[in-house]
Amino acid sequence: MSLECVIGVDLGGTKLLAGVVDGEWGVHHRVHRAVHGLTQHELLDAAVEAVEEARAATTHEVVAVGFGIPCLIDQRRGMATMAVNLPLRDVPFRDLMAERLGLPVEVDNDANVAALAEWRAGAARGASDVVLLTIGTGIGGGLVLGGAPYRGAIGAGAELGHITIDVDGPPCQGHCPNNGCLETLASGTALAREGRRIAGEQPDSALGRALADGRAVTGALITELAHDGDTAAVEALTLIGTRLGVGIASYLNIFNPDVVVIGGGVIAAGELLLAPARAEAVRRALPTMSRHARIVPAQFGVEAGLVGAAALAFEGARGAVH
Image (cartoon, rainbow, N blue to C red):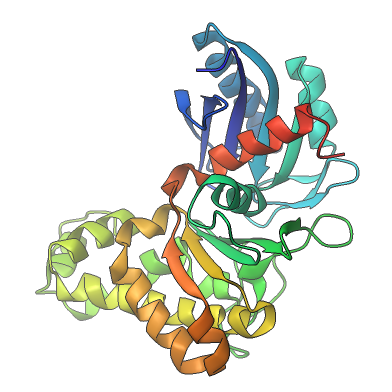
């Protein structure tokens, strides 16, 4: 393990994961926090406390901290301008965290940093053009185009969860003003919602019995029961995967990527999610595009955001970010 390490922080819509990361991408001293329902002040305090706990657990020098957050980021100023699923708006996040932690801090959108991790050392290593989706409470997006991370004019680009796949669809969640977004129809939140609906329609299924017993119908439960062969749970994942494929088809046509990487908590479903997504993407995308691209799970799994935030911190410490 290198004597110099960084701390990567993946701050999601419901939970925070932090860890000390070494130069070989090994993760040590993981720290978990629940953040759902916190105020902005409480959320910032939780982030600081998680970093301090991870820092105190290692005997090696921590040289920087990287944050991935599900938020529009003004990369020039390190400003968290607006989040759909977190109480962050116009917060000078980078400078505020650097002041409170006494360390150099880098910040980027959570899916951007996950894409950085998978491109540097994971499922997209060696690719020139990459689309990454992180599927959890919402859907984040990250892009590598022409062999370089793409963030848009001010660093707030690649909000791939907010393309419309149903013009007459339901209102998007959180602060998004749109209707029928991929996020509201194919996220982990959508999986839980559709799972509850299907459970009610199929009371004799394992999913239906779980609902009747008062169990919370979550994405994790649906995935567990689907792996056990419950048809209602499989139906829920197939529906979400098919909707996901609609969005992926558009990304294939627009970006012509080498690889589409799917990460986030929902990827625990594996091929139960990816197989219908691939089938729908192939059905809808231009044939040249669909033949070229691979659609694969994130190699770093649910830790892609943490590792990517660490990669951002390493690059910032070496002067490669600003």
